[in-house]
Image (cartoon, rainbow, N blue to C red; front, side, top):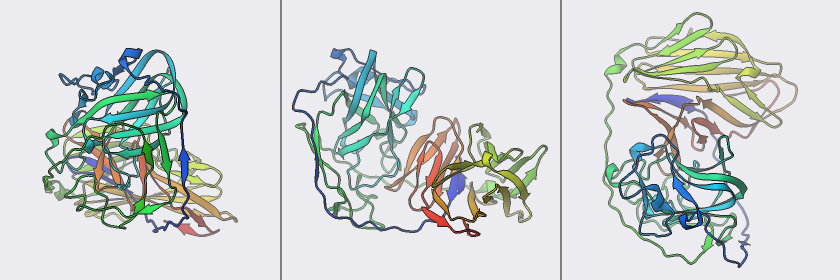
Length: 447
Protein backbone atom coordinates (compact mmCIF):
# COMPACT_ATOMS: atom_id res chain seq x y z
CA UNK A 1 0.00 0.00 0.00
CA UNK A 2 1.02 3.55 -0.51
CA UNK A 3 0.59 6.76 1.50
CA UNK A 4 1.08 10.08 -0.17
CA UNK A 5 1.27 13.94 -0.14
CA UNK A 6 2.34 16.67 -2.56
CA UNK A 7 1.64 19.73 -0.47
CA UNK A 8 -1.00 17.19 0.37
CA UNK A 9 0.46 14.08 1.95
CA UNK A 10 -1.14 10.69 1.44
CA UNK A 11 -2.03 7.16 2.28
CA UNK A 12 -1.77 4.82 -0.67
CA UNK A 13 -1.47 1.05 -0.88
CA UNK A 14 0.52 -1.41 -2.92
CA UNK A 15 -0.84 -4.79 -3.94
CA UNK A 16 -0.72 -7.18 -6.86
CA UNK A 17 -3.85 -7.98 -8.86
CA UNK A 18 -4.38 -10.67 -11.48
CA UNK A 19 -6.58 -9.74 -14.41
CA UNK A 20 -9.97 -11.41 -14.70
CA UNK A 21 -12.35 -12.08 -17.62
CA UNK A 22 -16.14 -11.99 -17.76
CA UNK A 23 -18.32 -14.26 -19.92
CA UNK A 24 -22.09 -14.61 -19.76
CA UNK A 25 -25.21 -15.51 -21.72
CA UNK A 26 -27.85 -12.96 -22.70
CA UNK A 27 -30.84 -12.67 -20.38
CA UNK A 28 -33.51 -9.99 -20.58
CA UNK A 29 -35.24 -9.04 -17.35
CA UNK A 30 -37.97 -6.44 -16.89
CA UNK A 31 -38.81 -4.63 -13.65
CA UNK A 32 -42.11 -2.77 -13.39
CA UNK A 33 -43.99 -0.66 -10.87
CA UNK A 34 -47.74 -0.40 -10.30
CA UNK A 35 -49.66 1.79 -12.70
CA UNK A 36 -51.06 3.91 -9.87
CA UNK A 37 -49.79 7.48 -9.50
CA UNK A 38 -46.70 7.75 -7.29
CA UNK A 39 -46.31 11.00 -5.32
CA UNK A 40 -43.00 12.82 -4.91
CA UNK A 41 -42.64 13.02 -1.13
CA UNK A 42 -39.83 15.53 -1.51
CA UNK A 43 -41.93 18.46 -2.74
CA UNK A 44 -42.05 21.48 -0.47
CA UNK A 45 -45.78 21.70 -1.15
CA UNK A 46 -46.19 18.30 0.54
CA UNK A 47 -44.33 19.35 3.69
CA UNK A 48 -40.72 18.42 2.85
CA UNK A 49 -37.94 20.80 3.77
CA UNK A 50 -34.71 20.82 1.72
CA UNK A 51 -31.56 21.50 3.72
CA UNK A 52 -27.87 20.71 4.30
CA UNK A 53 -26.31 19.36 7.51
CA UNK A 54 -22.58 19.36 6.71
CA UNK A 55 -20.69 22.17 8.51
CA UNK A 56 -18.95 23.13 5.25
CA UNK A 57 -22.26 24.02 3.56
CA UNK A 58 -22.19 27.54 2.08
CA UNK A 59 -25.35 29.26 0.81
CA UNK A 60 -25.03 30.56 -2.77
CA UNK A 61 -27.36 33.51 -3.23
CA UNK A 62 -30.24 32.66 -5.57
CA UNK A 63 -29.52 28.92 -5.33
CA UNK A 64 -30.50 28.02 -1.77
CA UNK A 65 -31.59 24.52 -0.73
CA UNK A 66 -35.38 25.19 -1.22
CA UNK A 67 -34.66 25.52 -4.95
CA UNK A 68 -34.10 21.74 -5.01
CA UNK A 69 -37.66 20.76 -4.08
CA UNK A 70 -39.85 23.52 -5.49
CA UNK A 71 -41.01 21.35 -8.42
CA UNK A 72 -39.36 23.52 -11.10
CA UNK A 73 -36.50 22.37 -13.35
CA UNK A 74 -35.27 25.86 -14.19
CA UNK A 75 -34.30 26.64 -10.56
CA UNK A 76 -31.52 24.78 -8.77
CA UNK A 77 -29.48 24.40 -5.60
CA UNK A 78 -25.79 25.10 -6.12
CA UNK A 79 -22.65 23.95 -4.27
CA UNK A 80 -19.12 24.98 -5.13
CA UNK A 81 -16.48 22.18 -5.31
CA UNK A 82 -14.26 23.95 -2.78
CA UNK A 83 -16.91 23.38 -0.08
CA UNK A 84 -16.87 19.56 -0.38
CA UNK A 85 -17.83 17.31 1.30
CA UNK A 86 -21.34 18.75 1.23
CA UNK A 87 -24.84 17.32 1.38
CA UNK A 88 -28.33 18.02 0.10
CA UNK A 89 -31.25 16.35 1.78
CA UNK A 90 -34.92 16.42 2.73
CA UNK A 91 -36.55 16.53 6.15
CA UNK A 92 -40.10 15.87 7.33
CA UNK A 93 -41.84 16.45 10.65
CA UNK A 94 -42.61 12.73 10.88
CA UNK A 95 -40.86 9.64 9.45
CA UNK A 96 -41.52 8.54 5.87
CA UNK A 97 -41.09 5.17 4.17
CA UNK A 98 -38.69 5.61 1.24
CA UNK A 99 -37.46 3.15 -1.41
CA UNK A 100 -36.47 5.39 -4.32
CA UNK A 101 -34.70 8.70 -4.89
CA UNK A 102 -34.04 10.70 -8.06
CA UNK A 103 -31.45 13.45 -8.41
CA UNK A 104 -32.19 15.71 -11.38
CA UNK A 105 -29.08 17.72 -12.09
CA UNK A 106 -29.31 21.06 -13.84
CA UNK A 107 -26.17 20.25 -15.83
CA UNK A 108 -25.73 17.05 -17.88
CA UNK A 109 -22.02 17.00 -17.02
CA UNK A 110 -22.92 15.90 -13.50
CA UNK A 111 -23.99 12.35 -14.37
CA UNK A 112 -21.76 9.67 -15.88
CA UNK A 113 -23.14 7.42 -18.59
CA UNK A 114 -23.28 3.64 -18.10
CA UNK A 115 -20.26 3.11 -20.38
CA UNK A 116 -18.01 4.91 -17.90
CA UNK A 117 -17.09 2.29 -15.28
CA UNK A 118 -16.94 3.45 -11.69
CA UNK A 119 -15.76 1.39 -8.75
CA UNK A 120 -16.50 4.09 -6.18
CA UNK A 121 -19.62 6.12 -5.50
CA UNK A 122 -19.05 9.81 -6.05
CA UNK A 123 -22.25 10.56 -4.14
CA UNK A 124 -23.60 8.48 -1.25
CA UNK A 125 -27.16 8.04 0.02
CA UNK A 126 -27.81 8.16 3.76
CA UNK A 127 -30.88 8.33 6.00
CA UNK A 128 -31.25 9.49 9.60
CA UNK A 129 -32.34 6.85 12.11
CA UNK A 130 -32.79 9.32 14.95
CA UNK A 131 -29.20 9.07 16.22
CA UNK A 132 -26.88 8.99 13.21
CA UNK A 133 -26.65 8.87 9.42
CA UNK A 134 -26.96 5.32 8.05
CA UNK A 135 -25.56 4.32 4.65
CA UNK A 136 -28.15 3.13 2.11
CA UNK A 137 -27.11 0.24 -0.11
CA UNK A 138 -28.73 1.55 -3.30
CA UNK A 139 -28.80 0.38 -6.91
CA UNK A 140 -28.23 3.02 -9.58
CA UNK A 141 -30.73 2.83 -12.42
CA UNK A 142 -30.20 4.56 -15.76
CA UNK A 143 -27.39 6.92 -14.85
CA UNK A 144 -27.41 9.14 -17.93
CA UNK A 145 -27.67 12.72 -19.16
CA UNK A 146 -28.80 14.75 -16.15
CA UNK A 147 -30.83 12.35 -13.98
CA UNK A 148 -29.58 9.69 -11.58
CA UNK A 149 -32.10 7.26 -10.09
CA UNK A 150 -31.63 5.12 -6.99
CA UNK A 151 -33.71 2.17 -5.77
CA UNK A 152 -33.17 0.36 -2.48
CA UNK A 153 -34.86 -1.70 0.20
CA UNK A 154 -37.42 0.49 2.02
CA UNK A 155 -36.09 2.59 4.90
CA UNK A 156 -38.07 4.69 7.37
CA UNK A 157 -36.78 8.01 8.62
CA UNK A 158 -37.46 11.72 8.93
CA UNK A 159 -34.37 12.72 6.91
CA UNK A 160 -32.59 11.51 3.80
CA UNK A 161 -29.63 13.05 2.04
CA UNK A 162 -27.15 12.77 -0.81
CA UNK A 163 -23.57 13.28 0.43
CA UNK A 164 -21.31 14.63 -2.32
CA UNK A 165 -17.61 13.86 -1.92
CA UNK A 166 -16.25 14.29 -5.47
CA UNK A 167 -16.29 17.43 -7.64
CA UNK A 168 -18.13 17.31 -10.99
CA UNK A 169 -14.82 17.68 -12.84
CA UNK A 170 -12.39 16.03 -10.40
CA UNK A 171 -9.29 16.32 -12.59
CA UNK A 172 -9.91 20.07 -13.09
CA UNK A 173 -9.37 19.75 -16.85
CA UNK A 174 -11.56 22.81 -17.32
CA UNK A 175 -11.81 25.98 -15.28
CA UNK A 176 -12.65 24.72 -11.75
CA UNK A 177 -14.66 27.85 -10.94
CA UNK A 178 -16.88 27.23 -13.97
CA UNK A 179 -18.24 23.93 -12.63
CA UNK A 180 -20.32 23.28 -9.55
CA UNK A 181 -22.84 20.76 -8.24
CA UNK A 182 -26.24 21.99 -9.43
CA UNK A 183 -29.40 20.06 -8.49
CA UNK A 184 -32.71 21.14 -10.03
CA UNK A 185 -34.85 18.66 -8.11
CA UNK A 186 -34.33 16.09 -5.36
CA UNK A 187 -37.27 13.68 -5.56
CA UNK A 188 -38.17 10.97 -3.03
CA UNK A 189 -40.74 8.18 -3.37
CA UNK A 190 -42.16 5.35 -1.29
CA UNK A 191 -42.27 3.29 -4.53
CA UNK A 192 -40.14 3.79 -7.65
CA UNK A 193 -42.03 6.01 -10.15
CA UNK A 194 -40.31 4.53 -13.19
CA UNK A 195 -39.81 1.21 -14.95
CA UNK A 196 -36.57 -0.24 -16.18
CA UNK A 197 -35.37 -3.09 -18.36
CA UNK A 198 -32.01 -4.74 -17.80
CA UNK A 199 -29.87 -7.11 -19.83
CA UNK A 200 -27.59 -8.75 -17.25
CA UNK A 201 -24.19 -9.52 -18.70
CA UNK A 202 -24.97 -7.89 -22.05
CA UNK A 203 -21.85 -6.30 -23.50
CA UNK A 204 -21.74 -3.40 -25.93
CA UNK A 205 -19.10 -1.32 -27.69
CA UNK A 206 -19.33 2.40 -26.86
CA UNK A 207 -19.41 4.86 -29.75
CA UNK A 208 -16.37 6.96 -28.95
CA UNK A 209 -16.11 10.63 -29.83
CA UNK A 210 -12.51 10.82 -28.66
CA UNK A 211 -11.11 9.86 -25.27
CA UNK A 212 -11.75 10.98 -21.72
CA UNK A 213 -9.01 13.62 -22.00
CA UNK A 214 -10.82 15.48 -24.75
CA UNK A 215 -14.46 14.49 -24.24
CA UNK A 216 -16.09 14.55 -20.82
CA UNK A 217 -18.04 11.44 -19.83
CA UNK A 218 -16.13 9.37 -22.39
CA UNK A 219 -15.35 5.71 -21.51
CA UNK A 220 -11.71 4.80 -20.83
CA UNK A 221 -9.67 3.72 -23.83
CA UNK A 222 -7.08 1.60 -22.03
CA UNK A 223 -8.03 -1.94 -21.08
CA UNK A 224 -10.94 -2.75 -23.37
CA UNK A 225 -13.23 -1.23 -25.99
CA UNK A 226 -16.34 -2.92 -24.57
CA UNK A 227 -18.44 -2.42 -21.45
CA UNK A 228 -21.53 -3.83 -19.73
CA UNK A 229 -24.72 -2.17 -20.94
CA UNK A 230 -26.76 -0.17 -18.47
CA UNK A 231 -30.54 -0.51 -18.00
CA UNK A 232 -33.20 1.15 -20.14
CA UNK A 233 -35.36 3.51 -18.08
CA UNK A 234 -38.99 4.09 -19.02
CA UNK A 235 -40.01 7.48 -17.71
CA UNK A 236 -41.57 10.40 -19.65
CA UNK A 237 -39.21 13.23 -18.72
CA UNK A 238 -37.46 15.88 -20.77
CA UNK A 239 -33.77 15.46 -21.56
CA UNK A 240 -31.35 18.35 -21.12
CA UNK A 241 -28.26 18.33 -23.34
CA UNK A 242 -25.14 20.37 -22.64
CA UNK A 243 -21.81 20.76 -24.42
CA UNK A 244 -18.44 21.59 -22.92
CA UNK A 245 -14.91 22.66 -23.83
CA UNK A 246 -11.92 21.01 -22.14
CA UNK A 247 -8.85 22.92 -21.03
CA UNK A 248 -5.66 21.13 -19.94
CA UNK A 249 -4.08 21.73 -16.55
CA UNK A 250 -0.48 20.99 -15.61
CA UNK A 251 0.64 20.37 -12.02
CA UNK A 252 4.38 20.71 -11.34
CA UNK A 253 5.68 18.92 -8.25
CA UNK A 254 8.19 20.73 -6.02
CA UNK A 255 11.08 18.75 -4.62
CA UNK A 256 13.12 20.83 -2.13
CA UNK A 257 11.80 18.65 0.72
CA UNK A 258 13.54 15.62 -0.83
CA UNK A 259 16.90 16.82 0.54
CA UNK A 260 16.17 15.49 4.03
CA UNK A 261 17.05 11.82 4.69
CA UNK A 262 14.42 9.18 5.42
CA UNK A 263 14.53 7.43 8.80
CA UNK A 264 12.75 5.17 11.29
CA UNK A 265 12.76 6.60 14.80
CA UNK A 266 12.16 4.34 17.78
CA UNK A 267 10.50 6.13 20.69
CA UNK A 268 9.36 5.11 24.15
CA UNK A 269 6.69 2.47 24.91
CA UNK A 270 6.39 0.80 21.53
CA UNK A 271 6.14 4.01 19.50
CA UNK A 272 7.70 4.20 16.01
CA UNK A 273 7.96 7.04 13.48
CA UNK A 274 8.74 6.97 9.77
CA UNK A 275 9.75 10.35 8.37
CA UNK A 276 11.31 12.18 5.47
CA UNK A 277 11.12 15.80 4.31
CA UNK A 278 7.51 15.44 3.17
CA UNK A 279 5.67 13.51 5.86
CA UNK A 280 5.72 11.60 9.13
CA UNK A 281 3.77 8.48 10.08
CA UNK A 282 3.51 7.57 13.79
CA UNK A 283 2.75 3.99 14.80
CA UNK A 284 1.95 2.32 18.12
CA UNK A 285 2.84 -1.39 18.28
CA UNK A 286 2.16 -2.09 21.97
CA UNK A 287 -1.10 -3.98 21.41
CA UNK A 288 -1.32 -4.92 17.76
CA UNK A 289 -0.50 -2.19 15.25
CA UNK A 290 -2.13 1.24 15.12
CA UNK A 291 -1.30 4.09 12.76
CA UNK A 292 -2.01 6.96 15.14
CA UNK A 293 -0.86 10.15 13.43
CA UNK A 294 0.04 11.65 10.05
CA UNK A 295 2.01 14.88 9.66
CA UNK A 296 2.35 16.86 6.44
CA UNK A 297 5.81 18.38 6.92
CA UNK A 298 5.39 20.61 3.87
CA UNK A 299 2.47 22.48 5.46
CA UNK A 300 3.17 21.58 9.14
CA UNK A 301 -0.34 20.12 9.49
CA UNK A 302 -1.14 17.03 11.54
CA UNK A 303 -4.16 14.73 11.70
CA UNK A 304 -4.75 12.27 14.54
CA UNK A 305 -6.14 8.88 13.49
CA UNK A 306 -7.49 7.21 16.66
CA UNK A 307 -10.02 5.11 14.67
CA UNK A 308 -7.47 3.61 12.29
CA UNK A 309 -7.37 -0.08 11.36
CA UNK A 310 -3.94 -1.26 10.18
CA UNK A 311 -5.63 -3.94 8.04
CA UNK A 312 -8.68 -6.18 7.72
CA UNK A 313 -8.52 -9.71 6.27
CA UNK A 314 -11.86 -11.13 5.14
CA UNK A 315 -11.62 -14.90 5.07
CA UNK A 316 -14.20 -17.46 4.06
CA UNK A 317 -15.60 -17.71 7.59
CA UNK A 318 -14.42 -14.65 9.56
CA UNK A 319 -12.67 -11.28 9.60
CA UNK A 320 -9.28 -10.67 11.20
CA UNK A 321 -7.84 -7.35 12.37
CA UNK A 322 -4.65 -6.24 14.06
CA UNK A 323 -6.12 -6.93 17.51
CA UNK A 324 -6.43 -10.63 16.61
CA UNK A 325 -2.65 -10.90 16.35
CA UNK A 326 0.34 -10.45 18.65
CA UNK A 327 3.34 -8.36 17.57
CA UNK A 328 6.37 -10.65 17.59
CA UNK A 329 9.04 -8.39 16.05
CA UNK A 330 9.76 -5.00 14.51
CA UNK A 331 12.70 -4.70 12.09
CA UNK A 332 14.13 -1.53 10.56
CA UNK A 333 17.55 -2.96 9.69
CA UNK A 334 16.96 -2.37 5.97
CA UNK A 335 16.76 1.41 6.39
CA UNK A 336 19.26 3.73 4.68
CA UNK A 337 19.19 7.55 4.27
CA UNK A 338 17.49 7.17 0.88
CA UNK A 339 14.75 4.84 2.16
CA UNK A 340 13.26 4.15 5.60
CA UNK A 341 12.04 0.55 5.79
CA UNK A 342 10.06 -1.03 8.62
CA UNK A 343 8.61 -4.53 8.95
CA UNK A 344 6.19 -5.39 11.75
CA UNK A 345 5.70 -9.13 12.24
CA UNK A 346 2.46 -10.37 13.80
CA UNK A 347 1.44 -13.89 14.72
CA UNK A 348 -1.64 -15.88 15.67
CA UNK A 349 -2.40 -19.57 16.05
CA UNK A 350 -3.14 -20.09 12.33
CA UNK A 351 -1.67 -17.11 10.49
CA UNK A 352 1.56 -15.11 10.45
CA UNK A 353 1.36 -11.64 8.94
CA UNK A 354 3.98 -9.00 8.17
CA UNK A 355 3.24 -5.31 7.61
CA UNK A 356 5.83 -3.66 5.37
CA UNK A 357 6.37 0.12 5.27
CA UNK A 358 8.74 1.98 2.96
CA UNK A 359 9.29 5.75 2.86
CA UNK A 360 11.84 6.93 0.31
CA UNK A 361 13.71 10.22 0.50
CA UNK A 362 12.26 11.67 -2.73
CA UNK A 363 8.65 10.50 -2.25
CA UNK A 364 5.70 12.46 -0.85
CA UNK A 365 4.04 9.14 0.03
CA UNK A 366 4.84 5.95 1.86
CA UNK A 367 4.27 2.43 0.57
CA UNK A 368 2.60 -0.23 2.67
CA UNK A 369 1.91 -3.86 1.87
CA UNK A 370 1.16 -7.16 3.63
CA UNK A 371 2.55 -10.69 3.57
CA UNK A 372 0.18 -13.42 4.82
CA UNK A 373 1.44 -16.92 5.74
CA UNK A 374 -0.90 -19.85 6.37
CA UNK A 375 0.40 -21.88 9.33
CA UNK A 376 -2.64 -24.15 9.61
CA UNK A 377 -3.12 -27.60 8.12
CA UNK A 378 -6.09 -26.45 6.01
CA UNK A 379 -6.26 -24.15 3.00
CA UNK A 380 -6.90 -20.48 3.83
CA UNK A 381 -9.56 -18.70 1.75
CA UNK A 382 -8.54 -15.04 1.47
CA UNK A 383 -11.39 -13.07 -0.13
CA UNK A 384 -10.90 -9.34 0.55
CA UNK A 385 -8.11 -7.27 2.05
CA UNK A 386 -8.48 -3.77 3.46
CA UNK A 387 -4.87 -2.62 3.33
CA UNK A 388 -5.45 0.66 5.13
CA UNK A 389 -8.24 2.38 7.02
CA UNK A 390 -6.98 5.49 8.79
CA UNK A 391 -10.41 6.81 9.68
CA UNK A 392 -9.57 10.35 8.57
CA UNK A 393 -12.49 12.74 9.21
CA UNK A 394 -14.72 14.19 6.48
CA UNK A 395 -12.91 12.94 3.40
CA UNK A 396 -13.95 13.88 -0.13
CA UNK A 397 -13.16 12.03 -3.38
CA UNK A 398 -10.88 13.11 -6.23
CA UNK A 399 -11.18 11.34 -9.58
CA UNK A 400 -8.13 9.65 -11.13
CA UNK A 401 -8.93 8.62 -14.67
CA UNK A 402 -12.41 7.32 -15.43
CA UNK A 403 -12.67 4.39 -13.03
CA UNK A 404 -11.26 5.38 -9.63
CA UNK A 405 -11.37 8.09 -7.02
CA UNK A 406 -8.92 8.90 -4.26
CA UNK A 407 -10.16 9.79 -0.75
CA UNK A 408 -8.86 13.27 0.12
CA UNK A 409 -8.61 15.02 3.48
CA UNK A 410 -8.42 18.73 2.75
CA UNK A 411 -6.96 20.95 5.45
CA UNK A 412 -6.26 24.67 5.61
CA UNK A 413 -2.93 24.60 3.77
CA UNK A 414 -2.76 21.14 2.24
CA UNK A 415 -3.91 17.72 3.32
CA UNK A 416 -3.65 13.99 2.68
CA UNK A 417 -4.91 11.47 0.14
CA UNK A 418 -4.79 7.70 -0.27
CA UNK A 419 -5.00 5.06 -2.99
CA UNK A 420 -4.11 1.47 -3.86
CA UNK A 421 -1.52 0.65 -6.52
CA UNK A 422 -3.62 -2.00 -8.19
CA UNK A 423 -5.99 -2.02 -11.14
CA UNK A 424 -9.32 -2.70 -9.43
CA UNK A 425 -10.09 -1.58 -5.89
CA UNK A 426 -12.59 0.54 -4.06
CA UNK A 427 -12.99 2.53 -0.90
CA UNK A 428 -15.56 3.83 1.55
CA UNK A 429 -14.13 6.90 3.19
CA UNK A 430 -10.42 6.12 3.36
CA UNK A 431 -10.84 2.37 3.92
CA UNK A 432 -8.99 0.97 0.88
CA UNK A 433 -10.03 -2.55 -0.18
CA UNK A 434 -9.11 -4.89 -3.00
CA UNK A 435 -10.20 -8.43 -3.77
CA UNK A 436 -7.50 -11.06 -4.24
CA UNK A 437 -10.01 -13.93 -4.11
CA UNK A 438 -7.25 -16.47 -3.55
CA UNK A 439 -6.64 -19.66 -1.59
CA UNK A 440 -3.38 -20.00 0.37
CA UNK A 441 -2.28 -23.63 0.78
CA UNK A 442 -0.89 -24.82 4.16
CA UNK A 443 2.64 -23.48 4.68
CA UNK A 444 2.41 -21.02 1.76
CA UNK A 445 2.57 -17.20 1.75
CA UNK A 446 0.99 -14.43 -0.32
CA UNK A 447 2.22 -10.84 -0.62
